[in-house]
Image 1 (cartoon, helix red, strand yellow):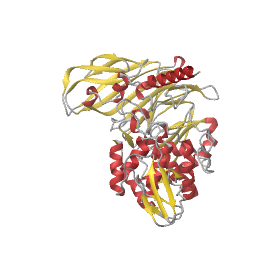
Image 2 (cartoon, rainbow, N blue to C red):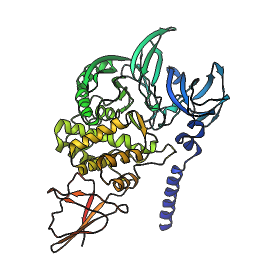
Image 3 (spheres, rainbow, N blue to C red):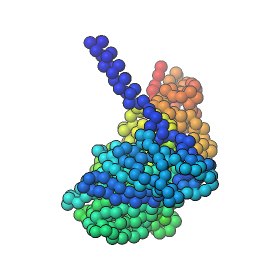
Image 4 (cartoon, helix red, strand yellow):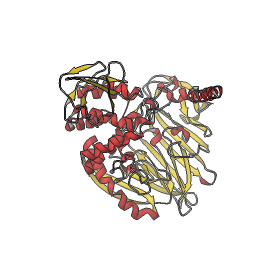
Length: 536
């Protein structure tokens, strides 16, 4: 039996190890290779036509780019089984070759630096099909309750190159936005990011819908929605003026949407108060009904929460408030600030997106029900923390870290809020982060430094502890007559964190024993995500 147990353990370890092995394709996807480094994306113009009966697509992407230096070989990403059919540059066909999910374009002559160029890439194929969207990613070919085609894409982790050719790396967004055109049967509607700029009937029984994004946009956020949609609109008087609100929903859900989407304006008001102006006034705010739960597609948020409050009807915090508002409306909208406006350069730093967006749920709860309710919400979501792997993933291989980036990341921000101990200053921190890094791609190191400089707090070890380990600090204390000793254990070397007690007392605590002659009641403030232990 012992030998069998040992063999099973070895098999499990081997399996886990094999799942973590990284390939050359991972590196090509996750790294700024030499074939990526010399050029910068400025604009995408994507044209798509689905062949619904075959679950295939055809299209082209005209990429405008700027040369940072001389270059002759360009990397373009497009995942199998999609294929590039042809590439045109300067009105001439251009040669290319394929290596897995990467194509290399070989220009006849070296391109000069500090110039703008365009290439047009024609592509086609049967894109990877999502099985459990939005978590696994891919195209979603479904039908609505009336049997009409209902089609979209969710591809954050898998990447935009699952369906169209692009520079599939978060560090390089088209600064000048994108245009998207969708050719669909006349009985369907094509919806995408940005503002609707017109439609045109073409061929027989087909219509092209044209959309334009004026702001920078993540490649995975560009998305088609195709279905039997109807549209209604509203406006919101926000910090930067009038913001267009557009809702594209299935006809049978019109009345439900008009009731449920009343939450949008108070949500925007709350998040603008705490985070600063909505980042995409030029492109508007839009919710589009989708056949999956939801996704933060910039200015075209996928909504599939079935017009229910909570997360598919449940309170993920078990605090009594998480089912009093629509999780998808709040969470996915929060990503407009963190994820879409502020984007991590490497997917390993996705905590920047998810931790702050999860904290937007806390802020919205607080706006509706008060600060105590917000505190209970963030404390409640701790039950979902796994502490399986560190929040920060592996760099340069397109690998994100633990899902704890949501709930543990939110609690990390809540700790920082307690240490600031001034909500006006905390609000200024959030608003200034959004001002400083508006429409930018950043690293964890940049954000950590900014927070440390702004707060003037020694947070270096705090970030190391919660982002780079799975250890939760343990507050150890012992009482000997009138003398009290306390320290942090289960922590990184040099860890220090001021800790607040329920009676308002603050303790300067490090990983070395400290003494106090006061008789302290060690009831810890529950806003700190830590554990405690009385020792002899």
